[in-house]
Length: 365
Ligand SMILES: *Cc1c(COP(=O)(O)O)cnc(C)c1O
Image (cartoon, rainbow, N blue to C red; front, top):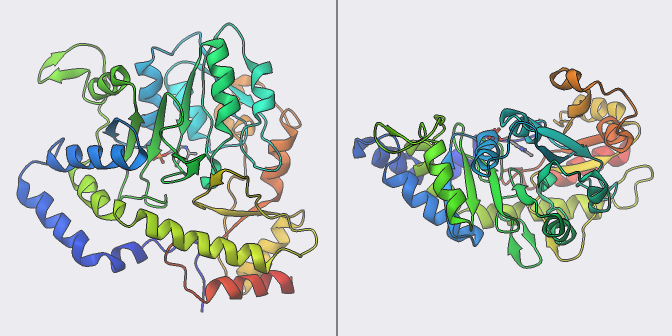
C-alpha cells in the first residue's frame, strides 16, 4: 500500500454531506461574489483567531500584498523577511514595490532568528514579516519588541499556521495584521484558492476591503487604484464547514507528530523538529533534517512512501531574484536547510498505521 505525502480527497470524503449541502446553499443563493457566505466566514474566522476583523481575499500571497499596500508600504521601503521561507512571503513585498530584506533562521526552529532582526533594520525598514513555518509559531515577543522600538509593523505570514498557539494566543492575532492562505494543502484549505487578512486594526481591515474590490466601497465609486482579489462565495461556504473541524484535525496531526517524534528520537544523523516551550504547533509539515536527504527520499519512495522538500531552492537563489545578485553562501543556514530537509507524510487523513510504517522504513534506512 502506497502512502501518499498528502491525501487531499480525504477531507471531502469525511465531510461529503456537509460540503455538498454547502455547495447547494451557495448555488441556490444566486449571489456568487461577496455575499452572505464570505461575510459569515469572515466573522467566524476572526473569532476563531481571537481578532476583531477578517477580510477574505483571493489567496495568501494577495493577503500579504494587500496588507503592505494598506500600510502604504511600497517603492523605496524595506521589509524584513525570513531567508528561509516559501517564496510567496518575498513576492508579496515585491508586488507592493518594496524590497525584501532576508534574515537567516534560527537553526533549531527554522524560523526567523530574532537576534538577527535588529541588525537588518535601516531607516527604510517599514515592516517585519515573520513566518510561522511548518505550523510552528515564530518567536514573536522579541520581534514585536524590536518592531515597537523602531516603529515598524509586524505582519504575520500565517499561511501555514491556522490554529497555532503562541503563549496562549492564536496565530493571526500576534502582530499588527496577518495573512492566511486557504490553498487546498494548508491546515484550513479550500477546494481552490483562497486567503484572508486578519487584524485588530480597523483602518487596515477597511482599506483591504477597498483594495480587494477595485478600490471601491460603493459600486462604481473608485477611491483608489485597487485590485480584484476576493474570497469566493463557494469557497467560503466550504471553509465554514472545514473551520468547525480545524481543531480536531490539527489534533490528529499532533498525534502523528508524536508518533514520529517517539519512533525516530534515537536515529543517528536524523534531526527532528524542536518543540519550543509556550508554543503549540499545528504541524502543517513534519520536517526532518539529514545530510543524506536525497538517499533517504529515494529509499522511502522505493517502498511507496511519498515525501516532499520544503523548499529545495531558497528565494535568494531562485531566478526570480537574480536582480539582487546573490550567490551561494550568502545565506548559509538557509542553504544548508534547503539541502537537508525532508517533509514526511502529514495530514488529518493519514492512515492510522502509516506513521508506524514510515518510522520503520526510516529506521531500516
Ligand atoms: C502557501 C503560502 C503562501 C501563499 O499562499 P497562496 O494562497 O498559495 O498564495 C505564503 N506564505 C507561505 C509561508 C505559504 O506556505
